[in-house]
Image 1 (cartoon, rainbow, N blue to C red):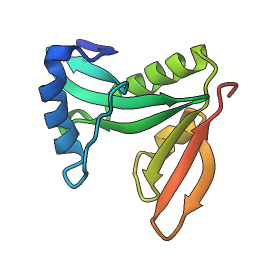
Image 2 (tube, rainbow, N blue to C red; image 1 turned 180 degrees about the vertical axis):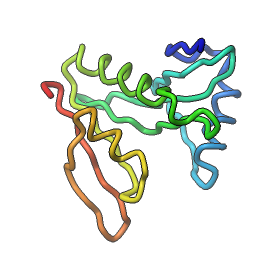
Image 3 (tube, one colour; image 1 turned 135 degrees about the vertical axis):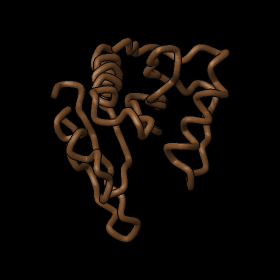
Image 4 (spheres, helix red, strand yellow; image 1 turned 90 degrees about the vertical axis):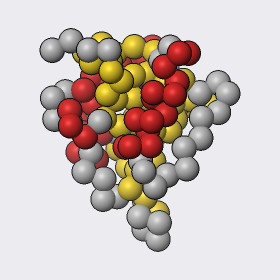
Length: 133
């Protein structure tokens, strides 16, 4: 299987936005100037992404998703490994906000993310992975 994990190219922006909308159909997707996106490319198709940004001394994953028909074959793992490696190389903790019912929460725990805060009213976890994990 030919999967590459790499930075998004300028000419792929609209294709990536379509994927984000399929993965998060009820979300208001916002990509700010300076945000970065790593994608999973499978046979020339964008099938996964990690959208992140640096804020001072920390990094924040703003969005993470994999196309439904290719989940479970390691694409999400490859994306998370890639972005964690990038964060650790600059010594930044990584933050991630997820719904407490998110089925991918066990994946995040495998990569060293731990609970920083739980907003029960909103049903949201704030997870953190320290640079030294």
